[in-house]
Length: 102
Image (cartoon, rainbow, N blue to C red; front, side, top):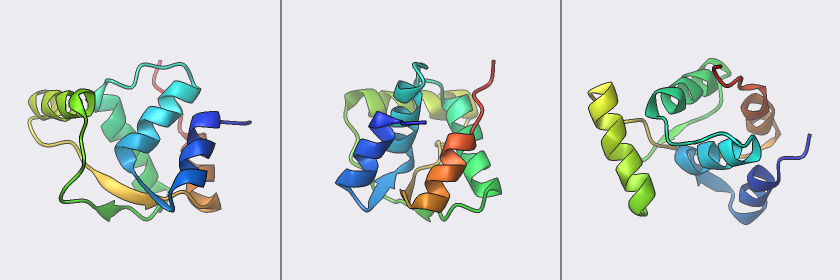
């Protein structure tokens, strides 16, 4: 299965933010990425799959991403998780196994 947005991220940078990976995955699957609850489920799924997630203290956020993080804080009553991860073969396999809630 070819995932053009994810492949583009993988080729562009060695490490990517979890939010950028999430957005690419959603776009590749024609799903709205603007859902902090499902995003957190995605991060939890990556943890379960033992994907190395490196905590990020500062993240360059464009307006829509910043709005997402603020909304996430309100919905989850905490700040949504932000990580860097390496899009190696192991991480890509895990990412592609994520099942979006119906």
